[in-house]
Image 1 (cartoon, rainbow, N blue to C red):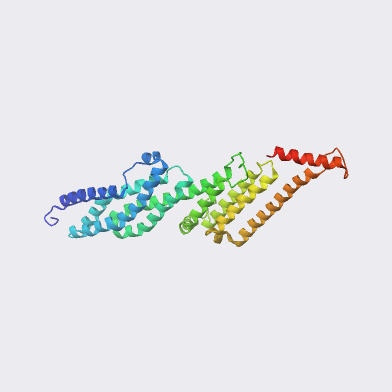
Image 2 (cartoon, rainbow, N blue to C red):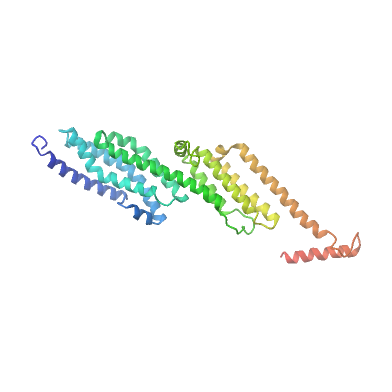
Length: 335
């Protein structure tokens, strides 16, 4: 048909058929056609599911659908190199645009800590497939496709760095004024430590992203630098929260419980390697110091009950009776 002069008609029909088929395959994979506004309005539970499907869909599209499409295009349109490349780009344009639009929409979504691991998954998926896409899209027809997806990759990377920066600010500014009832582990401590343990999984990706930000003091460094910084923000916040307790003993219990939890989480994960033995020893020293302070404060209270209540002195019976009465009274008020 190309030699007979029907190249334009062949290309038009071929592209229409293959484009519809690829769109249908994307739908089956769960990669929907959504605008930025629609993505912004989706609740996190549903957005999380769509982001997971996007990650799986991108890899499947590139490694199965587009690879097969390139092979078919090369066979059907072998008579013309230009027509072959043009038709491949045209027939896959809608598919690539759908992938790109969702990535861009996620990149500009409101930044919140729970989204970070999913954004990192999307970033890593694109890092994996872009080299493979360069082998499928080449020449002047494919340059725009690669450029667009590299732009999405960059914007997702910016979203990762921005989310980390925002998380640090939240940690520094979190100012709840209600102390935990019995000095137990603060929910913020549990959340932050579990969050940091998750980030360690992405350490290689974060290192590459943060090193690319050299010169930007807010974003530069490595994953290890970021982990250390975020834990220091947490510890400073907990120190302020411990001051909410009027009872010195409870203040010590709160500090011991939270520091011990942090140390255990660090020891049981890659955070231990990042922070090192010296860091752990210093926190254990802090726990021992708080333990001694707790005992001193507690025994000071006990001994104060045994002191003369002011109605007698020395070893007289009045003194013993007064002390005994005071202990009983304090026992009643504390039950």
